[in-house]
Amino acid sequence: MIYLISWIILGLILCAAEIFIPSFFIFWFGIGAFAAAGASFFVGLTFQIVIFIAVATVLLMFTRPIVMKTLLKKSSTRKINIDEIVGKRAMVVERVNPIEGKGMVKINGELWRALTEDNSVVNVGDYVTILKVEGTLLKVKKEE
Image (tube, rainbow, N blue to C red; front, side):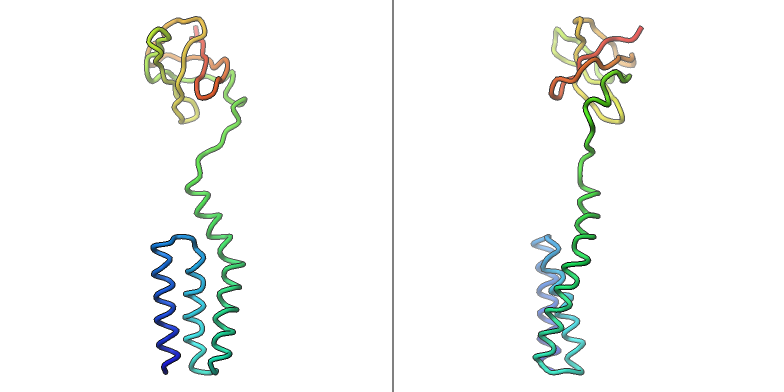
C-alpha cells in the first residue's frame, strides 16, 4: 500500500511540474508513475520500477514527437517565399506617402510596409502591384 501511495504522489508531483516547466518531458514520467501505481497491486517494487521506466520511455519516444509537432504547428508563424508576392496585387490600408516614409499594404492577409518607387502617393483603398521586396519593405506601383 505504501508503494501505491508513493507512486501516486510522485505522479502528481511530476504532472504538476509540467505546468511550471512546459516541455512535455516530465509529464510522461508522471504517467509512468501512475502506471507503476497500478502495477503495485500485482508485482513487487523491482517490476514497478521497470514498468515506470518502460512506460515513460515508450510514451516519451512515441507520443512526445506527435504532441510537439501539434503544438509547434499551432504556434509557428507562416513562412512565405518572398518571390511569390512579387508581381501580385495588394490593397493599401494606410496611405503610402514616400515623403513621410509611411504606408501599409495588405497581401495574403498580412500587413507590409510599402513605399512607391516613383515617390507617388497612393490612397487607402487603392490597389498597387508589388515590384520588389527590400527586407520588410515592399516597393510598389499604383495600379491604373
